[in-house]
Length: 125
Image 1 (tube, rainbow, N blue to C red):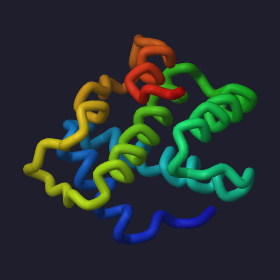
Image 2: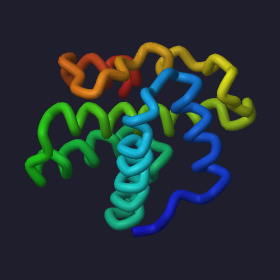
Image 3: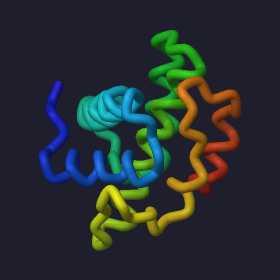
């Protein structure tokens, strides 16, 4: 599995801090981003396209991932997509994200809300 490019990893880490993702959850969010990028490369999906998230979730479900893990994976990908949306705006640990989707994400370890809530936040067409 490929590593996340250093510049992206740095911005993603800053976003995790800025959005209040607990420190002990951050390695899992990084892992989900790696899995997503790997999935997109393997299955020729556009990692910047929100519809790839649906295909990624279907793959996780096919592999028997627990719903809370799928939710956490979706949260990680949502933060990544937010980075792409705001690519010209650098994030630091003290900044508030400029995109409301990232700020609205529930960052608990085992979310109780379903995919429909988060997918609605992403405004998938």
